[in-house]
Image (cartoon, rainbow, N blue to C red):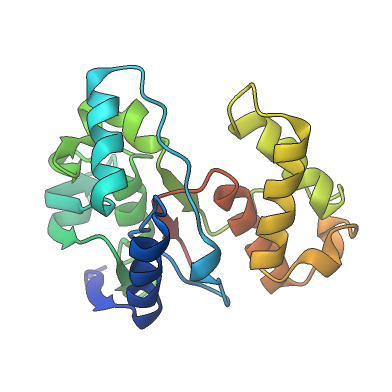
Length: 231
């Protein structure tokens, strides 16, 4: 069944432009490459430095601090096990501060493209680079700066929302992070996504839109520099 390939549209967000000016004034460390969905307040996004245990990681961090991350994909190809093409020579460059929409019909390969760009799946051929670093070679360093929210919910449905985020923070934040810092981060994310009033509700009691924002909240706990949102 022939399917039109996904269309990639790039647009500089006015909100991000204001954020960049505020960062230059305040000396903040982050410029998200992708951001914005469901009323996300861009001015509340902040980032801690990428863990630097190798020269490559330190170089990645230095570039993040200086100007954010460029994402460049070149001639990506991926096919199903039966040989049906999902991605055919897809190339795109996304500059720091750009808000990007990938538009296409059902089955066009949008999710596959996002997963390859985020390093969740490897392409059959082609390369994805973050600020010039090949994610296939330096994935451990790069993935610390990447947030990815899939189509399905990524949170436990029966726990209260705040508890869910606290458990997620303990798993995903540095091991030495103290409880007060975790609570502060969780509270800030809940405020940013307008979910503070839902903090004590079980996730199963949230609306569909609120559950999606709750999934976004899990990823925002680690302050990603690049943020992928699938629908």
